[in-house]
Image (cartoon, rainbow, N blue to C red; front, top):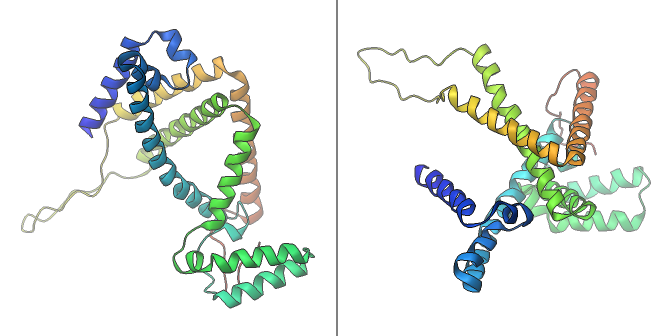
Length: 267
């Protein structure tokens, strides 16, 4: 971890030393510009390959991680239960096929849509029911990602995601103070005769979350001042999410896992 942090810090410092601030501000790929400035076309090509490999690794992890977020939202009732991605109902392939057909026909879906949906369900049944791959949730996140890309520019998408991520990161780290206030500290008492227990809870120094929240708040505030439209979009998105959460809380009397039976789950 120390090596990674040191390398990242040195690389960031090198960018600001080699490139003028105006060039960093105006380009979407400062690292490639850095490679071109130092090593010419060969450097640009090498840095491009490195960034591409890093992006592929990040995408590979995000595809499944974001899909699991959709699964968690489905289990809590925020989105339809079909996106849960597991086989908690204990259905076989044939049972799921009959259940899907009955549900869609009862709701008046056209026959061609019924055939497409059930056919896709049969093809992916092994992955979904046996391996627990959240295919439906991954398709949902792919659709939402495509809509985000189509509705804006690459720079706008980066700014929007970056601001929203750091805003959420700040809220998550701020929750640490509430947890420390309402949760008792871990007990380290042990018998003098027995072996000393291994600590299972790590408590970071209070200075660390304070510094992180301060810097994150500065980054978010600066981004909103530079791109106020993105700030409004973030407020709208958070407002919609908060509204859905409050509605579900009042409707269900609290967030709880769905009750599922062998007969299936609701759409």
